[in-house]
Length: 244
Image (cartoon, rainbow, N blue to C red; front, side):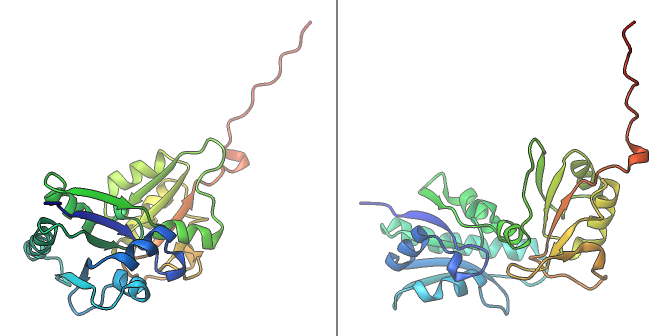
């Protein structure tokens, strides 16, 4: 008997027009979708694809706790994995909806850890939110031979600052509750002055230094580039030698 596949489907940053043609084709043919949702909230990934699901599509949902609770979160993923296994074992493909790109999505990573050794798993790329944010700001990821880091702002302060000092340009994800730490790390890396803040996909960028201390949502992103040293700080060029 054929065993089903788990398909991690990237649904993009939030705009349904940014779904890929391949994603739309898969959505319109699927019989079962799975996704996660925070307690008391609707799934953003589910909302993005709502216009492409045919009537009667079955839905498997993991409800994650609204507060940090590792044990409750693990139980929710375990229950979702059990439901998916039941469908895969019956030969049904299951499409797991991922905001952005599936391989940037921690929920899909949780399922891969549990299921990839038992079932065929595939990933269908999607546009990640930071790519949409950069497009809206016309912010190039790299120029010439510059080094780029895509890093989570949840890292310990020392590690975050160390990474930023080692690159020329950086994308910081999950800035929400880590804004003060991000500001300090950017300042230490000479990236603070021109840093841009995008509070959620689709919103315009603004200078990070113009943002107050108000809480940011979980989708907030910062784009930052190293500042050129002031003329007085540049190393002096040696005087040219004169042949005699």
